[in-house]
Image (cartoon, rainbow, N blue to C red; front, side, top):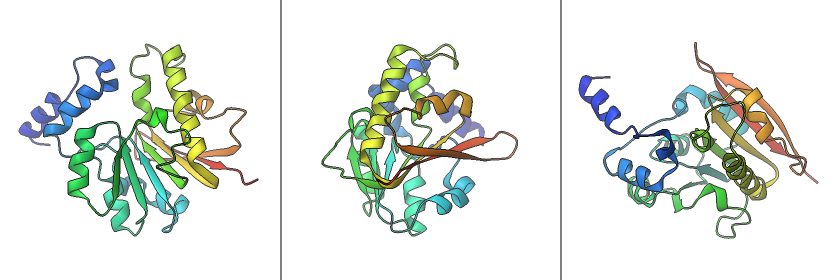
Length: 212
């Protein structure tokens, strides 16, 4: 990365971690930023995507931002992809950049039973859920607000998954911190995870909804 690129990257950093929860912060950032990848890019975990996602699957990407994940998957033959983000700025930019896919301005915490979206074979999030934890001081115990937002989000995900569908979560968060937020008695799904990356490992969680 050049010195100019480093300065540009530093200029996008928030004044406080809590800013990552602010739509205003993201709208301002996306005005000038063209691309950023959280938790590595698609090529780093492509073998896992092809293992768990079918080319004909209907796919929803949560908190898509300006990542090229959807576009790269589309180029690889996954051509039934819907992308959502709560930033209207990035949705407008990405709609113009990749008109072959669908883009909607929506908040992942309020999708439960969303009739506009319908149901999906696969729902993917890459680093998006990690943002919900930025205001917490310790990874061992989340605040009531964080727990509430996580539950609303996983409720939304579960409601939009077809029986047999898979929720894919790509994150740096280790299982002993993350699994408890996916394991609720009312969710009838089975969870497994794999890792990728050299040196620093990232986690690829897959929750498969049971069929009746």
